Length: 230
Image (cartoon, rainbow, N blue to C red):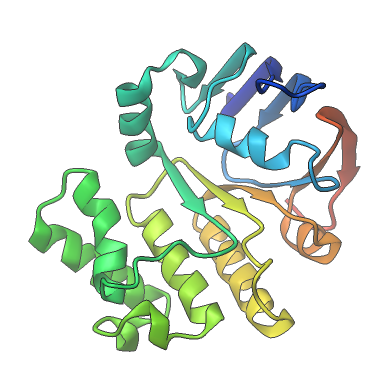
């Protein structure tokens, strides 16, 4: 089976920066796996995630995700690609406080072209699967940090994306809630979800990932074995 994500000689430069954020990255990531990207702050981890998710384009090189050359996409095409193929989970949740939990999840389906009734039905189903049905009519500000992260994950996967990109998903959580978020990601992976995970947490990476790749100063310096059994 061909890789889901192929990165060839990717370099990313930002205006005014003395060094590139990423320099000559080559990487292939397989379908149905969790890959953890690790490294010190400022090493290019989040930049790599943004390039995979078509939030930005490389200065040089090629990126193919789910059969699409995302480095060639214009803004409108990139937005369509993200809606159909990519789910995002961030450290600080990015929920809309003036919308109910149900509407926060449903909005991703609405943006993908679902009718309101279909989007709401999908949101209810997803919340029920994640043990959050009782929060449907409440607002994010009433929830714990762990619950908010679970809502954010529900929103990210409601459209069944080809890849879920998680940037420090447990970084704002205490250990207990972090373990719950990790268990949820592992459960999604067992159902076939491919996940690329950026983290500083060695425990999280070693417990969850099939592959661990390390970046230092924008350069891929190698991989280390993960404990997870394929």
